[in-house]
Length: 113
Length: 114
Image 1 (cartoon, rainbow over the protein chains, first blue to last red):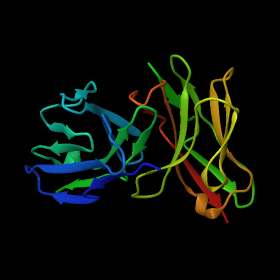
Image 2: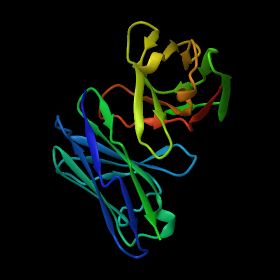
Image 3: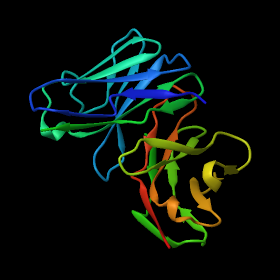
């Protein structure tokens, strides 16, 4: 089956710094990728939808200037958390889509100290 | 707007007994329905999906789910629970097309008691 990877799997950063998370589709081209966030003991909430070569569409309440999403190629999307704060600590999961199906990455745990 | 309801925060079942994790959904048009499992500090693992065809869908690790259109339900089942099945289970729905966003339920914690 199709594989989606995320890097890093775990990152700790200091408050005020920025961190970039990569999402790659390893064996298929994904014109659309989705970014989700999961708080402890809660469900996954869609943050944004990114289409290759265009600006991401953010869900209501998600700060687009804080969570920068770039989808520069058909196999790579990045999420950059800018000026991170402890409340940004969370589990971030991406999914990559071909026409028929979405495939989820393993997730990235971000801890902001 | 599409939505998923998982009415039980936690389900406890004795090892060897059958288990059911409930899910109901709402979506425009024909639903694509999914079950995922998440172990602590891990990502989502795909269990099974319903797109069309037989209402009883078989998936990974002996799990199955029954699609009921009239009740808009997609309950997850397993005939005999294992301790290793203990995890967090998410039901999800989206409309037709891989570009459609997926909406997840809040998750149900399954605890299998030895």
